[in-house]
Image (cartoon, rainbow, N blue to C red):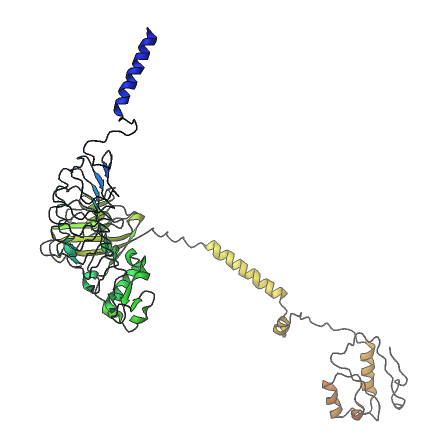
Length: 509
């Protein structure tokens, strides 16, 4: 009985499993409302690269990420996203869209990422992006945008990254940012456009965190002295948008499209510019130095009462009351920023954002905080070191006194690497005794010229022309002659010296 029951259960299971397959037994049934040829997986919908000319009419209501890129879409119907209340990301890149229109993004208030890149959009109207209050990333690069409405981005209060590169924009309103809010904005890409007029004061008034993400390279910028000094200062401060693309910043030297000069690499075009023109453009940063573990408080001083005050940390975190996520930074009720125990990661630029009816919406104050460790206290002066030093100096002086040669020619001896030694008096040699006897036995002293002649000449016998004592040979010894070793020296006294006693025929060897 057990075996037939198990066999029947197995057959039943196989029969039920076969119902989930189609007639071919390989392709599963499509989820409900999944467009033809599209791929639906959980909350993802991918219809990329299908050559669609219109957006699918029926879309699954659970879709949170829709990919319609690389198609041939030319227009979008108003309200086509109405059933998609959970939509978070929408990709419409690489299509043929030329305009958007009012109501295109109705019921997409939860959308966070929108990709409209690589289309044929020529302009953005005031209501084209209406209803995208939660949008954080907007990709509009590689279009044909030549005009932006002054309030084209109004209502995008949460926008953080805006990419408008590779378009045909000839101007951009940096004072109003076309309705953008600088509270959250971190990246504004305007590279590879046709910007020929850039208001320098409006650029200088932007907050530091937005300057760090403002990309203006590969534009026909004018070779303006104030603009050059402003961008040069940004480059020196290490702002990534300038330092990372320094070679791509060009300006028109002669206002001719073909006369672009890379002014960071070839700054000779600005040799006649005075740095005084750029002074006062930017509000100087307030420099603060704090020790690790110490307290810090920053006050956002404004010229008029502010309705809202927010801060941006060096880590690009927006700080509002009560403070940072990790709790190390607090924002007080009056708008001041307080840190109870400063750490090394708090080092950097803090930016204060103040808004109000009497203030400009982009009024900012910057504080450059430097954090350092406390310096160690100097050690007490130890007298033991001085005693040891005195002993060493005394020992050196004693050694110099004992071993340094005291003779007058010490300096010359040191230079010649010789040794000065005192010559001790020795007993006179037989040759010296003989010279003395010759001087005593001489009847008449030699004349003055003969004496002078023997002073500087190193000879043993006087010259014949200057000899005295009636033709006798007078012995003369040079200063450097070796009187202590007369071995090998042979000389004879002439036969004519008959008046000299005890000197005839004397031969010494």
